[in-house]
Structure formats: C-alpha cells, structure tokens
Image (tube, helix red, strand yellow):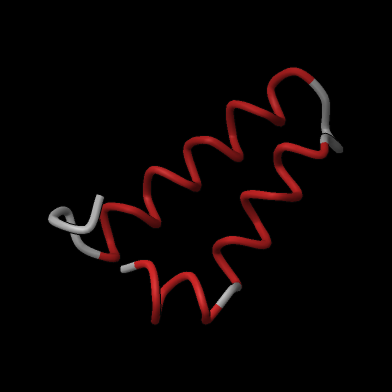
Length: 47
C-alpha cells in the first residue's frame, strides 16, 4: 500500500467502509476504518 500512495489507500479504506455498511449501518468494522482515515499517525508513520 505504501507504493500506491495516500489517495489509493483512502479509496480502498472507503470501499471497505461501504462494504461493511452493506451488511449493517453501524458496524465495528466500519468504525475502525473511519478511525484509520482520521488517524494522523497512520498517515505519517505507516505511509
């Protein structure tokens, strides 16, 4: 994912959120993905 860049990773995470919400509107999986999107540590350290 590091090679793909931030935009590609954000798109993938948003797709994961949408998939989790297809099953149920409020899921822990969607909440985790949303937290990752908002996490500066993830973007600064991981990518």
